[in-house]
Length: 65
Image (cartoon, rainbow, N blue to C red):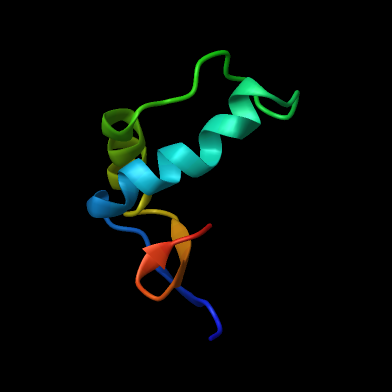
């Protein structure tokens, strides 16, 4: 089954935070020192969506990217 791409929703915040956390913790590719939690990720999604798309990849209803 192929993945689907769609606009992110506030409900995707926890999955997005979990996917992003390893980039903050284990790699030198982020300017952040602490990974954002789900509440912060939801705030970022809500703030960004009016001007720019925030996309997620889903497979079988689960956010995978």
